[in-house]
Image 1 (cartoon, one colour):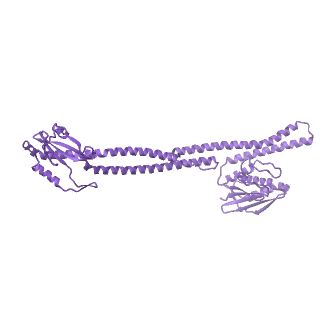
Image 2 (cartoon, helix red, strand yellow):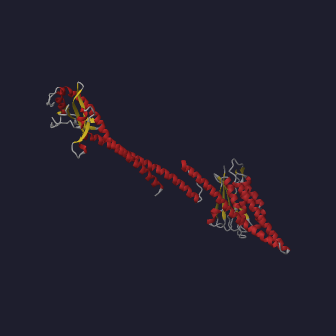
Image 3 (spheres, rainbow, N blue to C red):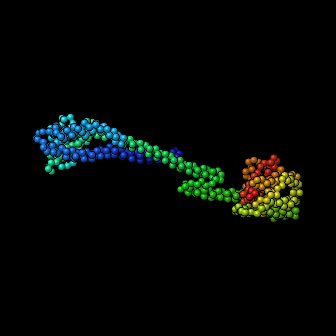
Length: 478
């Protein structure tokens, strides 16, 4: 199961269980609460009516009833009333109290019901018996044994005369009349619970999407780091941000370690050939050799030492350049003048190789630059072109000003570079065989050119020229 589904499922289960138990508690408390409020009202009504019935009950002859008289007439008028009351959206259209009155012995002397309870003995009923004993009397009795909705609440109050209990007045109310109130409250609770559950689910989805989006950004960063693609560190809050920072630090350390290992392997490979040649020549010099052979081996050792020295010098220069940061402001420098000066210094090697320089365009526009390092880059670029240009061929040069940059283009007519190798040009220790002797260079020359361009916030591009290779340098004009 995916992370997003796990988070959403867990959030939904927790919210659902919490909502279920909360709703269950609320719904379980609605009906008892309504009945408690009703019982409270019945207590007040019973005591009020007991006071109204007290004078007539005190004057009642033994064996007589109160079915006739002022109290009975008042109850009848109560029964005859028409009522249409809107109570919080619910309409009440009937009066639901039932009254009965007993004497001190529990005999029913008044009943506003069908009348079959008159003269009945209610002394054992809970409401009457407890009230006659001076306790609070109340009961709940089902009118139909198997129907819980037929329950009727009975609340009694003592009828007092001169401080003596002379009877009990009981007020009854069917629970069925309270059901609309209970049903409405339950509906409101269920609707509110559904909204709460829906909003909780929406919040859970939003939080899950936010978490998954953050984790996906982190995963994308890790995947791109694994592929070697440079990407900025994603801005993430909290622990995910700390994790991203830790991953970036780990990535940098691994890249540095991998870069060092790769450079060490390449450097070892570059050093191996000249050291092997020096070692072989040195062993042969221990033998008795003719003077011309000894001189040839000594020259070979000297050439290889020069090669190693050049390799070390280029490595030191490249390391120095990589440790620098772009500086501003820089003085204006004309790359055209630097190239003219370099061509004068290289005039002799150019004549020896029979190489001609052809200018396609000359623009003396100055750009902000470090003259010494820009000269180093241009020198390495010209030297690379001379190494790969066939004898008697032409090296094409152009310096052209564009709106945002000054472009320097150099093209040789050599064998060129395969398309798959173009992206690797400018990397340390990557080179293609020279056409003259088939030897590969160290690749540090073009690496120095690239690093100088980075320090000047410029760009270096390589394009196949058919035949040859075209190199394009772009230096910002400001």
